[in-house]
Image (cartoon, rainbow over all chains, first blue to last red; front, top):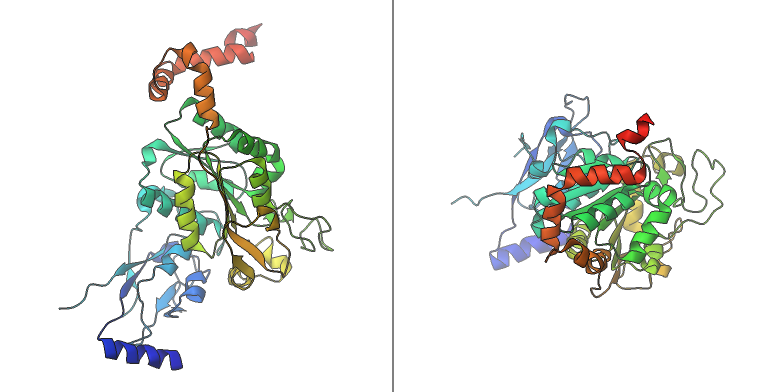
Length: 94
Length: 313
């Protein structure tokens, strides 16, 4: 996509890096409503094939370096009605 | 990098985790709004020991059972009178009413307009899902025109209440409307509402995939949120009477009223009764009430005719 290459160029030019997040999930609380999957701005969550204890499909993380990654925006955490998913900032590797 | 399994959630301190997962259907917005409220509480730094959640009957009424603080699940429509009384007796507590549109505006419609008129210092969060969800999706006073419910199978012919407009006109200090999709703005708005002295009211439009969405072409909760995304127009401080919600037309979200602080119902009551109580501060009076609670209970029983002596005679 055009915007992505723009972002890539900008990142290379300025030497900046995207903020990174780690996605945590309490699997057995998930009811598989799909709100986190539908409204993730980076589209890094997908429906998994696994079942949880209640028989729902919890989300799964699919990241593609360097741009299609979790950027720790916290929207999935906020929209999740089940208090199941949350993000934490990923510490930079030194 | 895959998803990391966790055992606890950052909001678990505020939740009765032993009762989770909650009763709400998959994709219901009530959990989202409860999360926003708990985050706002965390951000404002409210003590959960000093906070009370009062709720009525209905799907949203169940929230009182999931928060790790004192809470009360009142009879249908009577969450507001309970909260106003609680705040009048114990003004140091932070009282929130968390209830649905049917409970607050149909069954308890009388109470909420009068609480707004009196400017009682409570926070009211009304989740508007356009229907009576728990009882099977009947026509509610908030169902939009032409909306199909179990009791209006050919479409609703009545015009719905404009909740934010109604409460603004009744004299509330803070009135806002958001949806369960605008979670960040809702969180900021709830922070403001919690800090505000006076009657603060936040209406949250929410999805009900099971009872309302299913009959109106939005079977998936994502569809209702996409609808909100398409038609919501965020405007602050517009005339609340313009905030009418019509199907398939843009509707206004935002802060409608943020009035300067005025004397609240509790303040006026205190001014009137402080000479009777002979206390120097409201906090002292609260302590007195806690100390003499047993006596007050007996006294109120005698006044209302529910005393043990009365039962025997």
